[in-house]
Image (tube, rainbow, N blue to C red; front, side):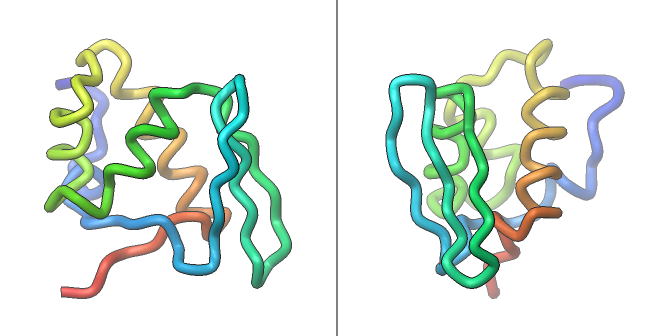
Length: 95
């Protein structure tokens, strides 16, 4: 695990916001939020895979493990996920 990991983020149970649609693209995907009308480019296919797998795992950490994201890459994934939370593309799952 990255020494600079955010334990609060890694322990969260996240999902793609219900009002967000992903459109696959050669570079990764486009994420469009129908309520905010915000468009976000996911420029890495591995980020797209993590985002789509979040709902199938108990925590962000479990998702990163399941997607076999190498420890040295996790910091960049954590930053990407935090940005997606701040832009309302991801939210917390209930229960």
